[in-house]
Amino acid sequence: MSDRNSGVSGLVNARQVGRLAPVRRTSTVDLIAERLREAVVDGSLPPGAVLGEAELAFQLGVSRGPLREAMQRLTAEGLLVIPKRRGLAVRIMTPEDVRDIHWLRARIEPELGRRILARPAAERRTVLAELGTEVKRMQRALRKDDARALGDAYLDFHRALAAWGGSLRLARMMGTLLIETRLCTFSMYEHFEVHRDLVSEHAAFVEALAAEDAARFAVLVEAHLDAEVRRLLAEPEAAKEDDADRLLAETPAGPQPLDRLDLPEGL
Amino acid sequence: MSDRNSGVSGLVNARQVGRLAPVRRTSTVDLIAERLREAVVDGSLPPGAVLGEAELAFQLGVSRGPLREAMQRLTAEGLLVIPKRRGLAVRIMTPEDVRDIHWLRARIEPELGRRILARPAAERRTVLAELGTEVKRMQRALRKDDARALGDAYLDFHRALAAWGGSLRLARMMGTLLIETRLCTFSMYEHFEVHRDLVSEHAAFVEALAAEDAARFAVLVEAHLDAEVRRLLAEPEAAKEDDADRLLAETPAGPQPLDRLDLPEGL
DNA sequence: GATCATCGTATTGTCGACAAACGTACAATA
DNA sequence: TATTGTACGTTTGTCGACAATACGATGATC
Image (tube, rainbow over all chains, first blue to last red; front, side, top):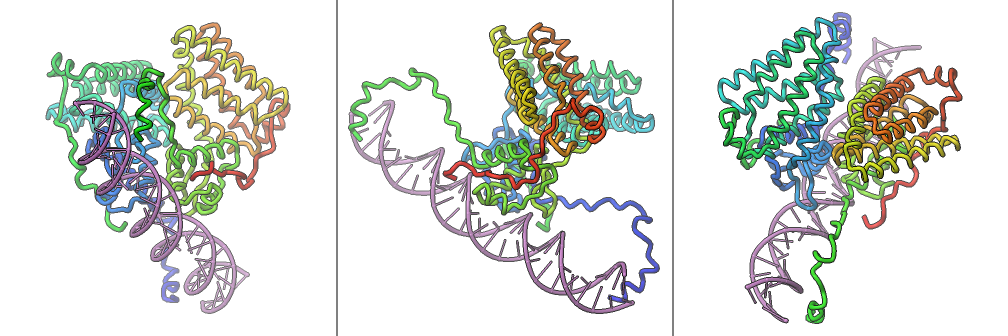
């Protein structure tokens, strides 16, 4: 014990070395909730899917207690519903939900441009670079006809928008709204589908920001969200017939029993 | 058993009698969550208060399991934080939170006027009547110098706004935002305080709606929310000195150990 | 005298188990 | 044949208990 203290003169205060990022000790409930969110996003848990607690808990390698707590959290976020004595079910979004969610996004997202442009120039460049990267991801996905990759880039684009245009709280809320948006897609279409115009629309967003034209950005975003609602609420079958080549579809993740949901060991 | 069936010819199909409202069976977790929300709203659980799970569960007359599930739900709503191994704590709102919450409300509430005015005339009258009632409650509370009653009427006014101007989802979200607003008051002031101008401001809201002037309504609401932020973020002590007579204060509910939180029997 | 180490305690995080409730299948009756 | 009653199996809702961990106090050492 005195050995350790004897060397103390050779040490420097940790504060001088550099700011250590605080140890991220995420609770088990957090892990489970995050895992469930991922499963909802990637379609492993399709809307309407009902899963027994015991089965899910076994797959996750935890007991039912923490799982139930995570379920409650997802329920409060509006992603899950808990039918009485029926385990848990992924929420099925109704046309009303689709309108609601996009209305809310339309209240928030157009304003984010203004807030991003209000930031210092250096940060603005960072934001533009990041958003540009996401658009490039979308373009690559479009070339590969990879609907899923395009959808993921879409999510990340808007996540970045919220992260830079808002606060932590706003980012969290937008994150939930975006997951709900994807649930809308899953609920409305049988397959996962995105519209091909998505990419050019988002490229225009970035251009507007680059031109520091907040008003134009707001108009574009609002128009995009409006268009999304119309696309989602149009009869899916009819839409597929009418302009099949303008949609990018992917075979559904389907009701596959959510493979590999294990948590990292040490739980 | 055959006795009961013998009389069947005298009965009519239930569907013909009238639509029975589905039986509302609220789960224990729902009850606990609601009780905790109430306690946060009325100040029985002041911001920063830490309570042990065992103690709380005992007071509520339930075991720790359902209580923990309810805690997770309130956590997702942003009302509670769960410090590691420290039980549960009511969230303390920072100035940043105050700005966030009111910014979000300012994106949503001004638009609600438009949506209310888009309703059929008969419903519009109902809404106006209801909002007028809340304003009268506020006026009565003002005359009695009852800050708490005024604050409660304020909550109900805005709840009604969301209920009539939005959807179920929107009402739920606004409900949470309103509770958070009250947490802002608790967090910023030591005592519960409201501004006297609140009543006239809200009377003006109703007048604008009655005049079917959605634009004016939007401007007024946004101005009100803006003013609220400034009032909340002004140094409380300084504010009390400067215009003490324009504030309505109430001795705090204080750290009283949340009396009477029992759930209805049968649990 | 101050800092550090150690111990004890209280509380949480997690798990397993029990009982009640629900759904389902089958049989009986009108 | 359609509807109702019954019994069974499965799953949830709830509780109690155990172990791990963090905190506070006390004592020891430099």
